[in-house]
Image (cartoon, rainbow, N blue to C red; front, top):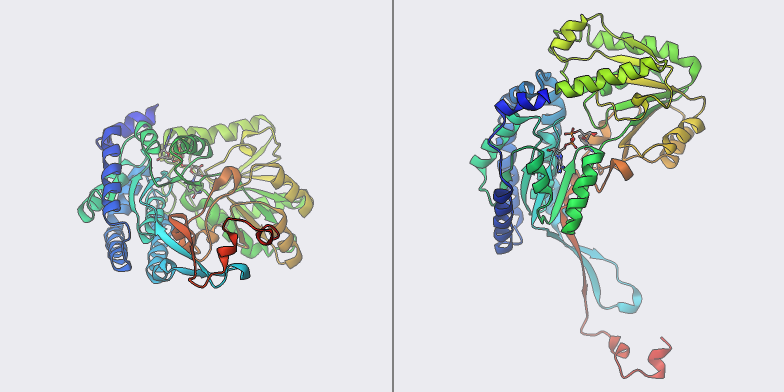
Length: 476
Ligand code: NAD
C-alpha cells in the first residue's frame, strides 16, 4: 500500500497495547478516587480544552492540510473550528442545568414516596475518530465526555499523523495522562484500544469497522455510541426553488471535496428533470470553483487508495452505461498530481453500479430517476438506513410525509448537513448508519448514567406488601 509507506515516515511513535491498557487503568483509578467532579472542575477542564484547541487554529489548519496534501483552510475553519466553538459554548452554558438531579413523577399507589433521576459520570470514555474531520470528531465527543464528568482516551486516525501529533502534544501539556490521553498508532493500536474495558466507547468511522468495534466492546459489555456512514439521499420535489437548492446542494457536496459523513450521496428526481438539473448543477459548481486544480479553496482526496477508489467508481459506472459529466476543464494530469477530483455528475445510473451501492465519500454525484415521492421513499426504505436525508421543497404535506415515512439518522430540509451543527438536537445514525447520539444534551446523557432513584417515605403504607400474606394482600 503506497499510502502506508508514505505515512510511515511521518507517523508518530506508535503506542503499545500494554501502555494504553495501563493508561486506562490509571484513569479509572483516578476517577474512582474522585467519582463526582463538581461543575467548577468540569468548567475548568472545558475552558482549558477550549483555549488549547481554539487557540492553535493556524497550526491545526496547517497540520490537517499537510495530512490531506491540501485541505482548504475554510473547510477546516468552518467544518472543524466553528463546529467546536458551538459545542464548547453550548456545553459551558447548559451543563450545570443538565447535571442537576431531575424530579420524576411517582404513581399514586407509591406516594408519598418520590422518584428522581441522578445523572452520574460513567468513568473512562474511549473515543476512536476518523480522518475526514480529524479534529472536531475527536473533540466534540470529548466535550460531551468531560461535561458529563468523565476522563477520556482518544485514538485518532492513522491517516492524519500530523494532526494527531499536534493534538497529542497540546493535550499532554494541558492535561495529565489520567485526565485525557491521546493514543497514536495504526489499526493494531486501534484494535487493542477497542478491546479495553472502557465505561463507554464512541466510535466514528465506517460501518464495517463499526461492526468490528461493537464486537470488541461487547466482550466487556462496554456500551457504544457508533457514528457510522452510509449513502445519504437528496430528494428534490417539484415545489423546490432551484435557485436556493443548487447552491446548498453543491456546497454540501463539495465541502472537504465530498469527504463528509453527511455529504449528499445521490439525488432522486423525475427523469424529465435530470438533464436540466445536471447542466445547472455543473454550472453552479463552476461558479464556486472555476478550477478544481490549482485552487486553494478545494480540498484534495486524503490518500492515493481513496483517489483510486473514486476513479474506479466512475470507470465501473461508465462501463455499465452511465453518462459522466465533469465540471471545470482541468488538466487531468494536474488533478491527479494534486490528488483532486473535479465535481462530477453521473446519470443513467442502474442499481448494479458500485457507485449506487457503496458510500461515495468524494465529489461524485449520481442521479437516480424517480417519478414520485412514493417511489423515492420506497427506494430509500429498500436500502440501508442512511446517516442523513435531504428534502428540498415547499409543499408542507410532502415534507411531513418524508419525515414520517423515511428512516435516517437526521434530516435537513431545504439545506444540506446543517442539522449536524445544531447543538439543541441529537446527532447520530440509525441501523447501519449508527446507534446512540451525541452533541449537546444528547452527548451529556450518552456519557452519563441516568440513574433512577426511588426514595421511600417514612409515611409509606407499603407494609401490606410484606409476608405473612393475607387474603387482603392477595387481592391487590
Ligand atoms: P474507518 O472505519 O476506516 O476508521 C475509523 C477509525 O477506526 C480510525 O481511527 C481507525 O484507526 C480505526 N480502526 C480501523 N480499523 C480498526 C479496527 N479493526 N478496530 C478498531 N478500530 C479500527 O473510517 P475512516 O475511513 O477513517 O472514515 C470514513 C468513514 O467514517 C465513512 O464511512 C464516514 O461516513 C464515517 N464517518 C461518520 C461520521 C459520523 O459522525 N457518523 C463522521 C465522519 C465519518
